[in-house]
Length: 337
Ligand code: AHG
Ligand code: MN
Ligand code: MN
Image (cartoon, rainbow, N blue to C red):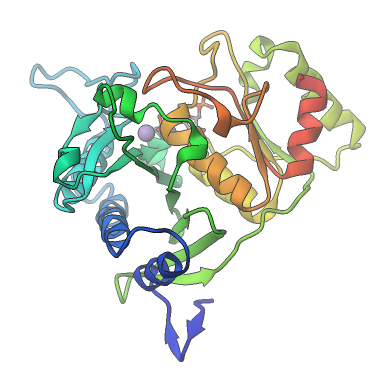
């Protein structure tokens, strides 16, 4: 139910401005930046909701008619490109975004020099779970905002900051409704896009992730290639809990995470033979969700240490990911460590 304050609904804009008034140092420019992201996700949401009606289903084709693949080696969906272009275009007009980096682009892009006000870095997974688009399963957008470091040696070195440096992180799930969740380091707040207003309205402040729930989320098809500890945990979860443990796996990280944020449990994407470092990307999937998880009282690890402490070495590096309720993550780590 949308929260009302002083008799009126609270939009994301108002919420960011009021929270920035209390907390983060930036003047109104931070909320101006975030408004580019909220605008982009409204545009992306409108495309997602018309998938099938307009020609945005399926793979993007390069000029020679072949499937386009991205730096990840994955086939690019048309909606990946639309989402990517939309985010870059709106962020480009904000004047205070210096660098953008995307899952869909090989390298970070400078759009404003540091000296000319380009003080922020925005990185994103423009469309997460894109393999699910054609079957009407929830997909999402994940983003993170960092500040540029004075005296950065290169653009790439400038963006390779550990997750604990994030100023803000958030995601949107294009599901049965369009839901935005974000944090600026002072709690996690949730908004639903009201299609009538075209505005994100506050529905929950200071969201807390349940410490424990009897549910895990994992693609067990790769079980035989997981490191041994993961298999031991999954076997234990099935036997020890005498069948009380359930499993949910949507195949869109952002949708699986959102369920865990609200209902608890644990998501695990271990190293596999195909992806020995895990499949999920550190900079614009694991880090933003780890920031949100910790702000909501949960935890996120790569099976060795805290995700937010990882010192990145490359923009598209992958990481194993165990993320969820504190007690759930500790339980998994008993077997994995
Ligand atoms: P993306 O669509 O941005 O490439 O992300 C897909 C990711 C993530 O959303 C999901 O959790 C994972 O891929 C599913 O991987 P599997 O199909 O290997 O389970
Ligand atoms: Mn993704
Ligand atoms: Mn993606």
